[in-house]
Length: 310
Ligand code: 6MZ
Image 1 (spheres, rainbow, N blue to C red):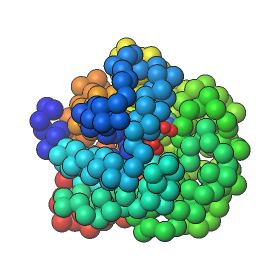
Image 2 (cartoon, helix red, strand yellow; image 1 turned 90 degrees about the vertical axis):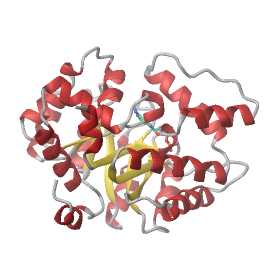
Image 3 (cartoon, rainbow, N blue to C red; image 1 turned 180 degrees about the vertical axis):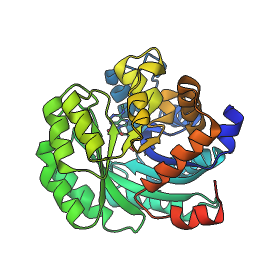
Image 4 (cartoon, rainbow, N blue to C red; image 1 turned 30 degrees about the vertical axis):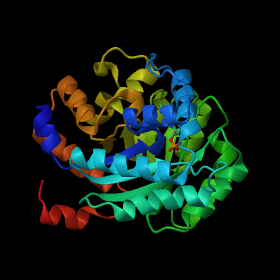
């Protein structure tokens, strides 16, 4: 079945650039910089965030940003992904400005030879300042590829409420918004996020009944990242994942990878994990793909599915 899944045209809506680079590339960068870091430990939330800082410590130059973007595109194209939204938070280092960082990503996307349509979501990292968030939104305005903004980062740090004004502005200027939600049990933060009515929610691991009902009543689409969510919640089986609760209620869901490097996964493997656990057929998966295409922040699906019926 994995092969059949690989052959399906797929949609990726939740993939962080610096969580999706090739392991070999990271090893190469570390060696070039004379750094010696291990990254094979169990993936607790803290370990995941330590790994991001290892990646960030070497993805410091425009050529490396361009390379990891190009490789990410190649890897997703190989998975038969037809539409990809890359999310990333712009970074300034001693070798580049935030603008140069973004230019490198956009260059890789524009020069990519594959068939896949790729767009960018600008990340607001909740561990950084509100000023940094404003800066990021401003940068997003420079590129037609940037179709939305998202809120992520270590969920133990800061609240969505602190950034509300930034996201209200992003929405006012026509950006779509996706928010990482309930990665830790924090009902107050979760309810603040739902009241904002984002266009999509990420993860939704720890929902109390009121929050879950509000999401369902308002049909706010959810980006599910099976392996990542299992790691976050310490689940040993996918059967206990909230996918089942939303799927049986016909709620709009997209299946996504989050961080292929950290989770050692691919988009096909994530679909396979869900299909195997919940006994879904290829037709069920096609339905999920078609519905998740409707969750995209850029309208590519209308023409795509007319020309390539699933
Ligand atoms: C929260 C996550 C994440 O922006 O440097 N990120 N934030 N939860 C997650 N999953 C459990 N996975 C990735 O990509 C890496 C950044 O994405 C966010 C973190 O802020 C991480 O630093 P970029 O390209």
